[in-house]
Amino acid sequence: MEGEGIVDREIEEIRRRKLEELQKKAELERQAQIAAAQRRAALKQILTPEALARLDNIKVVRPELAEALEQQLISLAASGRVKVPIDDATLKKILESIYSQTRREYRFKL
Image (tube, rainbow, N blue to C red; front, side):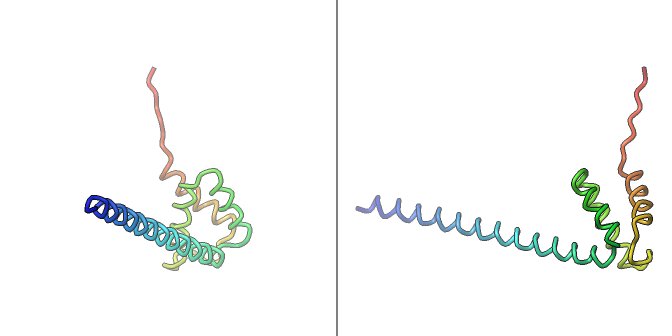
């Protein structure tokens, strides 16, 4: 029966597309894990253990701030604009700078 053959081909095509989607998703996740591992390795070289612990604590509370801070730290270290390893006190200063840039100030008129 010809109708069954068409249905089988359509089902096979759907399966093939779904498999491709899953493979692409798995590859993207793998690349993200590799990038995260590389970023973590860089941060371990850039930060003292105390500063790294502070960054981990920030990541729990404010993940978006931690991500911005990580990018800033890697950029600062790569450009040589900060002495490595970055200690906890220096990290606090950098964090204050980033926080003041990202913080929204709300004013209400009554």
